[in-house]
Length: 88
Image (cartoon, rainbow, N blue to C red; front, side, top):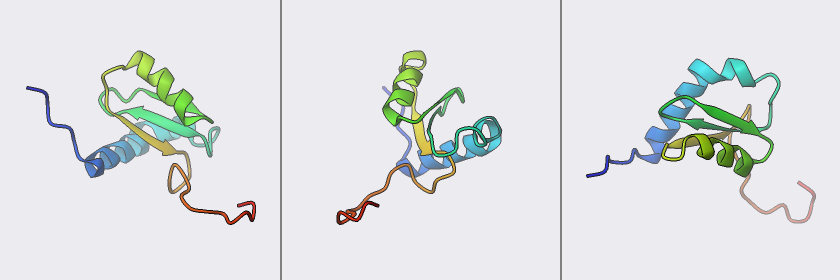
């Protein structure tokens, strides 16, 4: 029987904790605004300006893992909403 998948809240908590404890010091200064994907089991990670590229590279190394995606030094990975053509 497969293991129960953690909730979205648990994934976010674990991902943020791993970032603060082990990854932040290595990426924050030189990669601000880029996407970071963290393997929640191993702590392995990838950084890229393109979220799909970062995810794809990490999946090649860790194909069966659970990942957390974030944007470095941003409150959220993506913006949601309509700009109204104002160039936002």
